[in-house]
Length: 491
Image 1 (cartoon, helix red, strand yellow):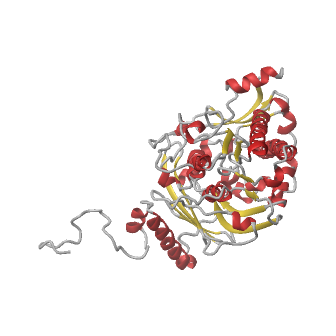
Image 2: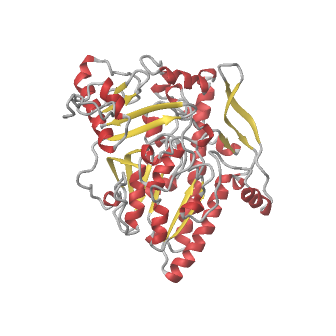
Image 3: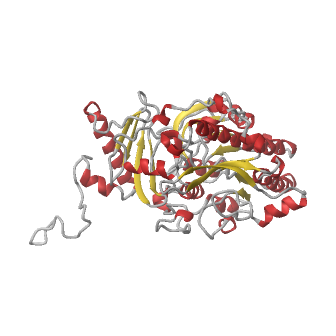
């Protein structure tokens, strides 16, 4: 699993410049999901959904604790994590890398072997990493040639990129791959000796910004080959004003076009660095005699703007740049090299892990197993659209989205709603929510989203009941015991 990873940085998804042979190999030997979406484009709620198999409004871990806006900071025990279910079935269960599911409760409290690396970005001060460097005589990280814009208040902006003055073999990505291989060697011994199955995850912190890389990766790709997409011309016309504020926060307009291209090229270099570590992991599976019998999955928690819509990072804008994510699945013995445009979600991966282990998903889970797709089948009654949610980052800001093949509806309670025709406007530049030509489409999507939320128990639907034409009020929106009762006490 990677963090903040755009789909269009991977060869199998059509990028002609970025070298990702090992991710491409997983796709060629398995299934590629072309319409894979995160339930929320923020690290912690997305990762908590993967762990529990339920959507964020249900597990209620709704924001990253570093930018907490009043929500819970720890995951409750209401939903059983898939890791405990696997433990119950005799699995070794391990994780290396980014956790970011709460502030204090780490992987060990959820049934994983593996350390709790805190925070949102490479924890380069972690004692385990520093000891690993010292054992190998490798230098500790230092950065130079920082890339920053300028905040609206005139102060230097957030760090966006820089030269990491370490050799590639000293990077935190290399460290995580080493630790994962060590765990795989341990699990392989148990498997070959006792037949004990295993689940092993490595969660890279990249290619999340800032792009801090050894120079050979930072400058691996020429900015000259970077084509800036049309969304770099975003005007924010008829868009929620928060998008313009986020653009200012991420200092986009204070960067030159050359710098914008350099940042994208650096992001590509980060992807290649991680792909090389993934290659080390797949080679380890082969060396340990595990490849032929091991399912391999790859995905990310959410995407990244990298300047699209004049934005960076992620935030309160439900564009495909940050909601669509890579999704790959290789199941031994199944035909490979095919793709599907079925709508799938991170919570489907949760159900998939349980399915591969011969366990039924929890009855209340929101996902379904992807194994049938890997076998070349599409399950009956698969979803025809997908919803997503956002609850805030830096400040509370609730949103809900409904995405169909052609259209996307975004409901922003305090601002203008958004409606995009993805067929004629794939970069989501023209908000057509008030376009009379799409009146019927808008009405149908509002009603459909309303029903999805109401049926699932997402209370966001109450606002929609009173504010939009969603099919007529047919319940007590005040939640009072008195409404509908006459003076004689008769309903």
